[in-house]
Image (cartoon, rainbow, N blue to C red):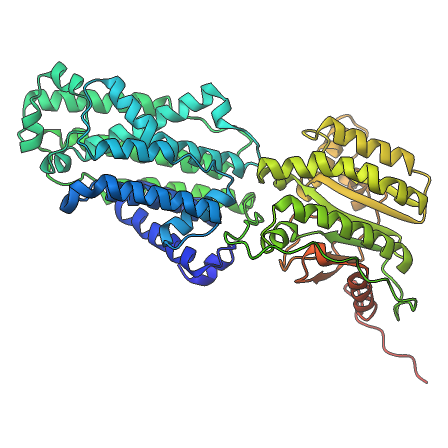
Length: 583
C-alpha cells in the first residue's frame, strides 16, 4: 500500500507506515481467512486489524523460533518491556510496535490488554502441554481471546456505540467462545505441521479418550483412532462457530456480512480437515481456491452493495497522530477586531465545523480535553465577532453522532464537563449580548444534565434577536433527514399528507429546526476537506472554505478574513452571471 493511502488515514509517521505494511504482509502470508475477510471492511478498520494480527504473528515468532528456543523467554520479555515503554512515551522505534501503538491509541484499546498474551506465550517457551480441556481453555483465554475481544471492540466502535465488552459477561463469553472455535480450527489445520515440529496443541484428555498415542501425532502416523478424534473435534469446532456472536442490528450490514464470511471460511477449513483426516500432510491445510473464491465473490458483491447504499461510518473518523510534540501553552488572547467593516455584505448564516481540537492538543503534548477547552474559548471569541460583523445565524458542529466512537474520557469532557462550564461562563455573557441559543440533534443518548443545560439556555435566551447561535450536539445530517422522512411517512399513512404533492418545503418543515435558513458560508478548520454529515439539506448552496488553522487558533480576525473572502465571491445559484450594466 502506498504511503499516501496511509497518510489519508492520519498515519503520517514513516515508521508506523512501514509497520502497517509489514503487518499487512504477515496477515496475507499466514492468515488467509483473516486477510480475505479484512478486505471486506473499511480501510481504516482493515489496517487496524492488520496491526493486531501482525503483532500476534510477531509475538508467536518470538516464542517459537526453532533456531533459538532457549532465548524465547528473554525475547518476549524484552519486546513486552519495549512496548510498555512505547506506551508511556507515545512513540516507538520498532515498525510493528509503532503500528500497534497507533491502533491502541486511535481505537482507545486498553493499554494492558497484551499482558495476558505475553504471559501465555512465556509459558509456551517452557514447553507447555495441555493435560485437560480446562488447561486448553485457560490458554485460549490468555493468548487468543484478547485479540478477538479487541477486534469485537473495534467492530462495536464502528457503530458509534460506547459498549464495554468487558462489562457485559454474556457478550464476553460469546466472543471467547469464538476465540476457542478459531484456535481449535487452526490447531486441526496445523496438526501435521505441529507434529513435525514436535508440538501438540490439543489436550491430552482428548487423545486419551480416543486412544491416540502422542507419538502418532509427532511421527505423522495415521490410524482409525486419529481419524475418529479429528472428526469429533471438527464437530466440536462447528458447534462453537454455530454459537458464535451475532452482531447487534445497529451495526453496518456489511460488517455482519464480513463476520458471516469469516465464520463460513472457517467451516470450509473444517470440511477440508475432515476430508484429509486419513492422511494429514506435514504442512498446514488450506481451503481450495475454488471453494473460497465462490464464497468470497458473493461476500464481496454483498458488501460492495452495502457500502454503496450506506457509506462507511468510519469514513470520517480522525485518529490522533501517535507522537505528540513538545508541550506548549494555550494560545494567547485573540486580537481585537478592527473597526472597519468588510468590503462586501456579510453572510446571513455561517456554519462552522470546529475541527482540530484534539490534534492541536496532541501536537503540544497535551491531553485532548485541553484542546476542547481551548476550542471553547475560541467559540466565545467567534460568537462575539459574528455579532459585530452582522452575521445573523451562527451554527457550530459541537458533537456529531459519530463522535461516540471517541475515547470515553474525551466523550465525558464533551458531554459533561464542558456543558457545565458553558452554562457557568458563557451563557450569561451571551444572554447579555442578545444572543439566542438553540440546539439541534438527537436527544436520545445525551446525558440528562446536558439536556438540562441546553433546555435552560434555550428557554433563557429565546427572546433575544442579535444573533442566533445553534449548537449541533449528537447531530448527524443523514439522521436528521431520515427522521424528517419518517415523520412525513407517518403523516402520509394517517391521510394528512398526499405523497403526490410532496414538496421540498414539506420536508424542510420536519427538520430539527425548521426555521433555520440556508447556510451562506460553511467553514471547516483543522485541515480536513469534507463536510462530515453536517447540515446536508441547509448547505446545498453554501460557499465552502476549508482552513488549515486548528479550531483553538481560529479567532475573530480569522472569521473576519473568511467573511471578507465570502464577500468577494459571486453566488449564482446555478444561473449565468449578469453582465455589468452599460455606463
